[in-house]
Length: 422
Image (cartoon, rainbow, N blue to C red; front, side):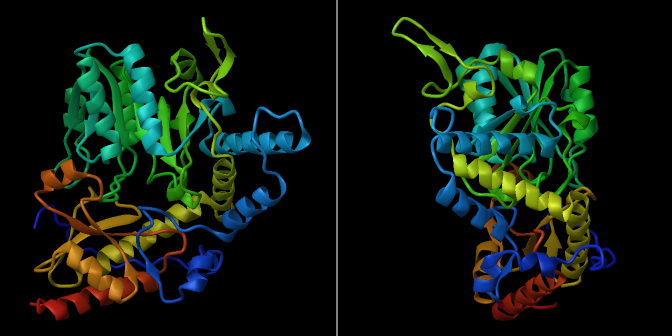
């Protein structure tokens, strides 16, 4: 097997510091599905009652279109929408709420940067650096820009241990490097990238940095000012909020210099057939009626996470990840894809003699939900020489018992395929 993790001693979460069972009771789906072992949070997290009920109450009491109406209901809706922007800014420690652009998700946020900042500031031969760990959403927009502008896409490698090779990365940076676009936490392996070093090295060469925080925001305290990144994106649905809403953070000077990428209502000051003038950022990038309830739901989700304590969430998932690593590596025939010694919240694994898709199907018969496939990271799968893996990922509601049921489901699959313990 490729890039397998060595066995390590078991470590169990400290229940005194964080009570996932109490948290679990705040998620209605587990009450409706009491036998569910949900280990696919990296794909999309379940929603707490505070988000579900809060969005429903907004629709019942305060809904109207924003920024346009002069009547009281529209004013209340607008106030709540802009308050959500303030919540996101506080959550990320942005300098100002005007640095927060609401988008449909991280994918749209990356595309916005590629299609607005890219043509305005990149020229043929300029380089954008990504890594072998990236989700397709942080690869394809730059390939499209390469086809459009003639830029060069440079790929930073990972080492045999699954970690970003910082020495190799530094060697790729040069006078033509304009942007580094990199994951903060790899969605396949759970590797936590040393993004502080990435930012420092990129800035030393005059390059900007975009970080994909989809997996990091639900699991780590994120401070964009401390990171000093230029762009940061994440999706609401991965951090216990609704689908269809996400965030692009960008330093205000960058937003001010970027042209609109979509035209329509709410991003304009004036329109005539001769000329159109545009709003300042961030409204300049929010053409059309926004997902108002989605933004409010996202703010409720971020408040929910803050209520639990982001350091406590990190510690809970770190301990649970270590426990899962230890438990799974004790099972003969199971191998974990390496994550550079800094895995958090997700782990990909293989079971000898069983295809990951078959494995996930058998797990489902035991009410264990995991993801199987290439995880929207086909270049990484090619690098690992693997067609697919099974991936278990954790959330604030995940427990030791969930990990133990996963181990039981693996043994059941091995028994069914006749490949157990040899």
